[in-house]
Length: 219
Image 1 (cartoon, helix red, strand yellow):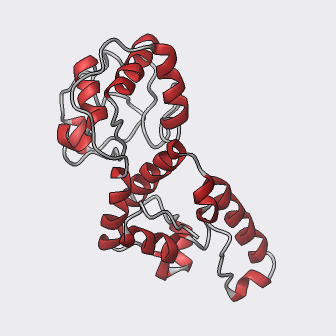
Image 2: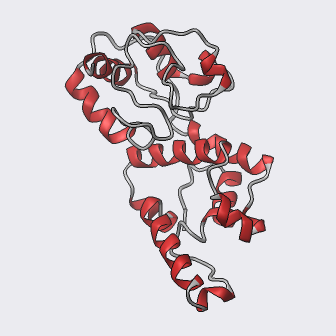
């Protein structure tokens, strides 16, 4: 399970110790898993966890899918969304320590060296394909997920969607999203705004340009 050597050792250890019971085929079933109705609820939750991310099949995933999951793991652990509150209430040993969260944060930076600059004129059709493969784990065009909805983001002020909970850093940034600011953000969110909640980078300049071209046209 989880033999990908690109995953840092500490992050791998946390995933196996704290996440594998719901997100792998190596579930360690507690005693109450044999007693209904608790057994039904637990099995339902484990099946849902495996569908979302199964560490036992990690090696079969595409690089794009691994990158999406790495970013989700880093983001959700830092925001306290994983493990879920009800699960933590019963399984105290699944709680993530500060050191655990820091180890998982490294997963968001497994993409390799980032190409500086811009990639020239972008292609919106290619950008849509990249968006659908690599961004929809956290974003949708018309609904808030881990990140805010992105239809109309081009020309919008950062932190301005009323029904989304932004980091304080983003709400106070006074950034307007255009070609320059989106390129910088996709290159390295932490460099643009320390303390933000995004754990994803697009390392290739031409792919950033394509994504920006797509976002620019979805009004």
